[in-house]
Amino acid sequence: MLHIERHFKHLREAFDDERFDRGDSVRAWPIGLAIARELARRSGVKIVGAVDIDNQKVGKDVGSLIGLKEPLGVMVSLSLKEVLSGHDAPVVTLSTVSSLNACFPQIEEILRYKKCIVSTCDELAPPWETHPDLSRKIDCLAKENGAAVLGTGVNPGFAMDFLPVVALGVCSEVKRIKVFRIQDASFRRLPFQKKIGVELSVVGFEEKKAT
Image 1 (tube, rainbow, N blue to C red):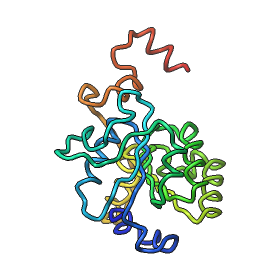
Image 2: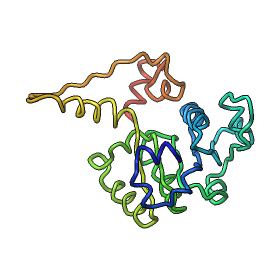
Image 3: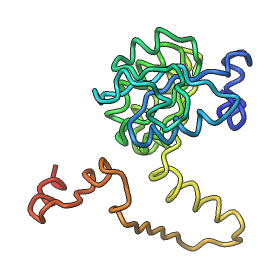
Image 4: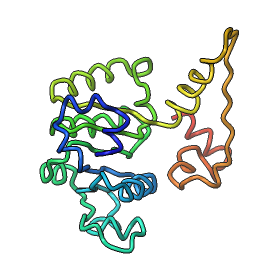
């Protein structure tokens, strides 16, 4: 896949160059829709599979779901195993959940098929401090299967972690760091709104926070 090959050259060591023209996809909509739309417009990338648990999307062409004029000839499947075993694409984009604990079984299954992973799982970028045990398991699985795992979560991962560190590169002295993130969740996707408790009563919010 061109977008992987261009930014992460170490993946060439695991796979021959000619294999970087296809990509499987395990998607959590609507983030997955945005990823698919971006990949579909790139000439060096070919989507060969997609998985979703939404029955309304299963069996539909990915092209129609992302608003393309022509179908891609790739139908959304309900079975991850079916997609992984049916294609030799070396890279999977994984955008399902934010929790690494919840995402780990998917990561493990994909790595067993010797496929590299690029994931939007927030807690996967980076996981070493917060999930040391899972990090070691993922690292070992990736090495055993000649694959690589890249976490590209925006927050945590980029917005409040990597970006501030890079910005500090031009500073000669740093005394302390404070990072604030304020956003209007009404413009965000519905799953995110539900996750942070939008429209819950105060009692319902406190109950959810306690769990």
